[in-house]
Length: 156
Image 1: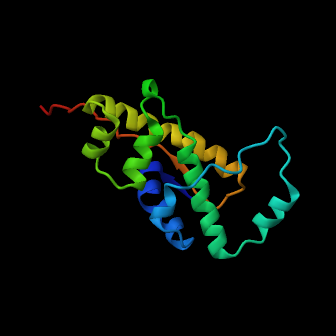
Image 2: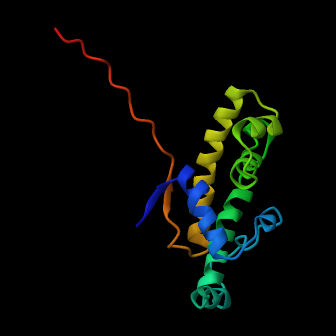
């Protein structure tokens, strides 16, 4: 199973699925969350059959939509850091950190914490939707850990 860090996934792999699926970036903001789980856990047999018989382009579009659903499913509460807005502004609208920080109205420290939290929430949402929509070819993603700093040793 392929694994990649969430930042590489959103900046590189996600756009690969968008391009392979023939989606235009203008379509991304209009994607609605569909395929929300119903009250029962059984997969609709017609939906399952469709998922199994998609063309390569349809499948790429389905995968890209699955990732978009995960982004749009993230929380966007004032007190929780506006995760969805940060993810959309930075990774879909391609705004830089400064412009995204201004858009969400946060200080630099607040923004850094919120962006980190947004990426972690996205991983949870992505994992759910990846499984729910039967997308095993989407890679496992993880939050990158900074290497631990080792104390300098003094030589005698």
